[in-house]
Length: 552
Ligand code: ATP
Ligand code: MG
Ligand code: MG
Image 1: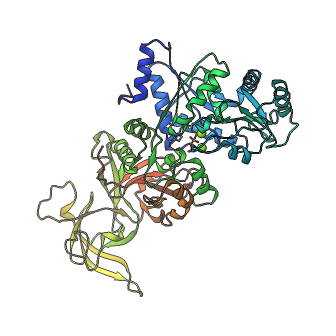
Image 2 (image 1 turned 60 degrees about the horizontal axis):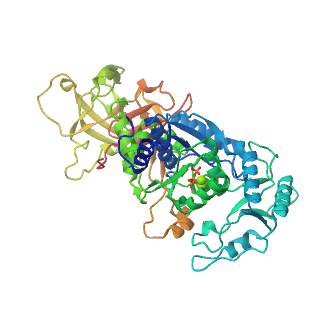
Image 3 (image 1 turned 135 degrees about the horizontal axis):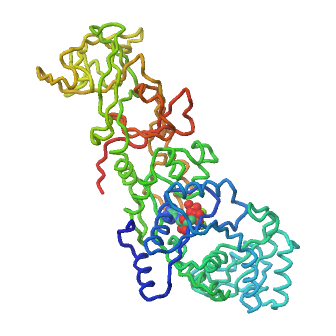
């Protein structure tokens, strides 16, 4: 079974099934289509789908599309793609908007029972009248309208006789409740806006607190899992289910949202980054959207493994992004071919190697996974090495190339630096080396040892490529409060989060396809960028570097 780690929600489900409260559990993943999914949503997706699967239940994908002003078909399409890509198939695919007629009828049930009324107060007045935790709220002067008048006004709201904001439908509960959510919450509002699913059929829309419990009850959801900020809404959730006389009684259970270090997660913040062009769209590899992670090179397996590992709890915490990185390294370690690439090239001429000659050397594709076999790489008189694998004046302990020093070229020969060529500005532009044919890799040469091994790419056949290296997009600010953080996060966007380098890959990589993943010797794991890679140009995104001190 996949959901092996125990969590308190799983325990509730086990208890409910043992007590025969349900024959079968039904969960749902209910995104609002007002943005792209992110890794926090993945936590909810993994939890809902795997919990149901473990107990042979069902999971619905439901678009919570009750706010036409913020929603769009583009987001629906992306959400469907992302849930599928993560590896989950839903039982039912529903739209909250499918239930608008039913919800309207349930509102009528409330009105008829004297449990809801049409209010003419403005949004601001309603907020004011609600009061604060230190004292009771104030009742609206419209609170005691007759059932007949409320029925008439609500019908006319639906017909479009009133302007946005002119009237709302409110629950009639308790203006002195210690829970502010119970002080006559707004259930319906007027919005003359075209809806992506229902067009212009409706001009009144249910609020989340009205819509969500009804959606769950209509679908027969048994366990309605949401994040902690809805804990205080739970009494209202239960009130709606009961007073609307829903047959099925879903149970709301809250858990802590996922937060990650150096990352903003909410769709609202991500949208600001996208709209203000701090990033290259919703699939920018630096943001934690599912599409961004996919483009960065994360695999569904790695994201699912991460979500299972972080577990499900009620206390708020922030997970180290290094833990996510750990899981992609684990996933790719045995799968990704390992090749040599030079990200910041420096030309090396091997002066005693015959001009015009090319030899092909054998190299294992993945030394940790022999089954992946061997590849051939060319070697000749001219190669590229990494600029920082050479130093003219090396510090003590430097083992790589410097004048007079000998190193091993990975999979090839020992070379010794004989001469440094500079341009007029005094910059090193080329290194001249000699090689020792006796020292070929695999020849069993034991005559002498060198202390450093460096990687390289043969120059005449090397394929130019772009390498995108990333740093965290958001600089963490541990000291400020959540509100401060909210206001200032755009100031903390790291201006150096993307570095694009022009270098070379081995010729055997010319047929790489978009989304192919590699481990580049010493540089880390890379993904072929699906957006900017063309027939003529390979672009690689660094998923993650090789080293990490992180241990699960
Ligand atoms: P955001 O604040 O990012 O917009 P949201 O909760 O408004 O998130 P929804 O589309 O309503 O986004 O979310 C769908 C489901 O995903 C909800 O059940 C929600 O609780 C869950 N979810 C959203 N963000 C997280 C998160 N960071 N961690 C865990 N679950 C989350
Ligand atoms: Mg929401
Ligand atoms: Mg939101």
